[in-house]
Image 1 (spheres, rainbow, N blue to C red):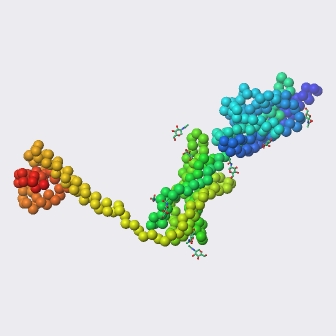
Image 2: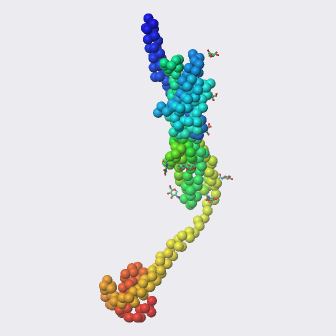
Image 3: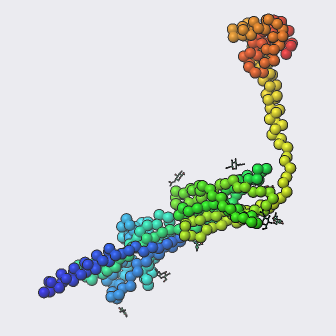
Length: 334
Ligand SMILES: *[C@@H]1O[C@H](CO)[C@@H](O)[C@H](O)[C@H]1NC(C)=O
Ligand SMILES: *[C@@H]1O[C@H](CO)[C@@H](O)[C@H](O)[C@H]1NC(C)=O
Ligand SMILES: *[C@@H]1O[C@H](CO)[C@@H](O)[C@H](O)[C@H]1NC(C)=O
Ligand SMILES: *[C@@H]1O[C@H](CO)[C@@H](O)[C@H](O)[C@H]1NC(C)=O
Ligand SMILES: *[C@@H]1O[C@H](CO)[C@@H](O)[C@H](O)[C@H]1NC(C)=O
Ligand SMILES: *[C@@H]1O[C@H](CO)[C@@H](O)[C@H](O)[C@H]1NC(C)=O
Ligand SMILES: *[C@@H]1O[C@H](CO)[C@@H](O)[C@H](O)[C@H]1NC(C)=O
Ligand SMILES: *[C@@H]1O[C@H](CO)[C@@H](O)[C@H](O)[C@H]1NC(C)=O
Ligand SMILES: *[C@@H]1O[C@H](CO)[C@@H](O)[C@H](O)[C@H]1NC(C)=O
């Protein structure tokens, strides 16, 4: 009879335990980066069990212990190094506070409360699962002008926002004129810091800005679908009369450049051949065709000479031709 009732008692305990364990829906908790996270156990102690008979601890999903209260005293020995000096227990509501929250603290935690009646055994009397999420507020988006308005009425801008978590949902530009508001989507560039895990995001766009209208540009960041949007300070561009086009100095340089190059080439060719003439008076083989041409008439020779700046090989030949034709005169000719 006594055996029977005690087995029944045990089976009820097991049943209740199974209920507790399976029905332990994880509750959500949210914390900000570098701030404090709450890991509540939600234990009410209905049987008014003395602290002396309780063993309470929190562990993460890898079963590393964050904190343990053994019969009313902190047991630091079981605590994992990652959580040393980072926790404090609020005993009034059995909430463990985790300090200096990092992105990697985003995970599942469990709290267990055991009743230690005697040396023989411990009964699990309470368990709570906590799903901790971590947030970091993105900075206010900032607009930067990349290229100013030119005659084509477009300006190039970028916008950035830093040190947030998790990845934002959307980022875009908004143009407001007196009568209209329009949105310009852009592809977000996302960089994750490999140490902190925080994100920096930016967008770039070419926006139409017409000289005859006042316009205010905003950059908008939507962190998560449920969160409120973050707006940049407005970037305002006032209407103004169209400006006359300025002459472009680049064009002058562009036309002058080939002429300059021609002159330089001609001079270089001249000096090279002057040197070569002293060393090697016999014209080279490659030049023979041209020399034949050159020997035909003075006119042909001059035609060839006009091509001097284009090909140095020919130029060399021409000078050699001049030499064969008229000897030392060619030297004075240059
Ligand atoms: C526990 O109590 C503290 C103050 O004593 C409070 O700040 C905290 O929000 C409470 N936590 C829960 C989960 O009720
Ligand atoms: C719990 O026990 C303490 C003494 O151990 C007592 O003062 C208190 O009234 C009890 N509370 C309840 C709800 O039984
Ligand atoms: C983050 O932003 C939210 C909403 O604007 C605000 O309530 C919260 O206090 C901010 N948190 C921090 C740590 O700045
Ligand atoms: C852009 O051009 C306007 C005049 O057209 C000038 O007032 C403004 O300072 C320029 N902005 C920058 C960033 O160059
Ligand atoms: C402005 O952006 C457009 C489109 O992205 C690009 O084609 C253009 O070269 C940019 N202009 C300047 C001055 O950066
Ligand atoms: C804006 O609206 C006003 C009056 O509604 C109108 O006179 C003006 O021409 C409009 N401006 C533009 C740029 O459409
Ligand atoms: C993100 O931006 C912050 C502030 O501008 C900067 O210090 C940090 O280096 C950036 N991180 C990355 C990964 O670029
Ligand atoms: C972070 O990334 C940079 C380059 O992007 C790399 O040089 C550095 O070693 C990385 N640090 C860690 C801790 O992975
Ligand atoms: C633009 O705004 C200025 C004031 O900032 C105002 O004086 C001007 O009339 C406005 N021009 C137009 C076209 O709305």
